[in-house]
Image (cartoon, rainbow, N blue to C red; front, side):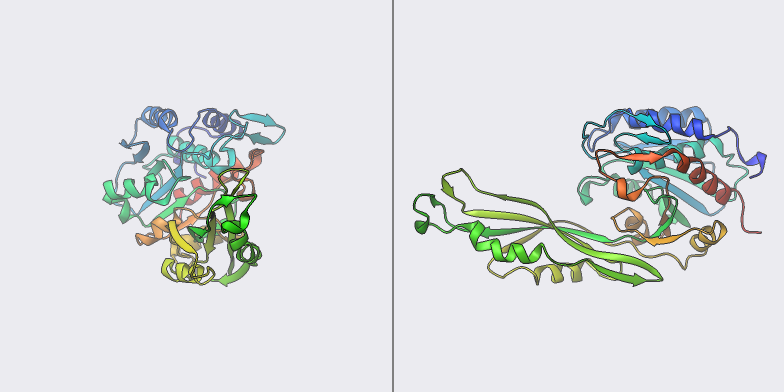
Length: 364
């Protein structure tokens, strides 16, 4: 990369220090105040561009020169801690809550904003650090940001720095969470014949639904996997009471060629009519943007491995707004939400360097 495209040197050490600082700031969903303030201070010290606030989200808008707009985006929140709230380095790994999902991506975003010279890159740039991605779909901060800042919807490309282990992950699966309620009748456990045991009533169906096989699908040359899992289960009021209710949460991940409406119909077909099914949360799949010229250019320039995004990401929100988008980040998808979550330190600098080069120069 030309020395004129960067303003501050970025190294593996500086990226690691920044990631550790981000991990050490608690930011479980709904409690992103402190990390948002940290990001605001860093961006304002940049003294270039405009820093905007939207609730617990932060938007940086670089100087506008009439060039195509590229948006970098990443969420600031994490799932609840599992005795992993403090950053810890062990060899070539940086452990800690959110280290891989997705504070490593946030660190790379901050480094890009702080180091790139906006006058020397080929795009107008924006960066969105948003809240509440790990919570319900309707509370996700990016939706609010896109509504309040309509200029973002004119972007030519959005890059989500979600964990991909330096692969280019296209689109994303959609998701439905649905509660299935099986009703019974309570009774004394010493006289079970006077009641109806909801667990017994739902047992055969529950055994079947937990054995639904995963279903791989090839779309645009990459693989997505449809999955259906029982993720929560509750029943019973007391040890000596026949349970009058069983409630199971079904988490259904559907592929990008399936609409939310078709996914819901498919899910309902797996539940007996006498059981109640209520959709509590759903998010559409993200479109596969491989045919978009900038997406194709990024993939081909660096010879990146292409994959489908198995988890849901806000690529879906961007593509629904007509913005080509992809996932690319230093975190490792398989480590998301684990107590032993970590980011490989060796992934940080390549993630930064590839994005910096892409933003700075076109293909020759």
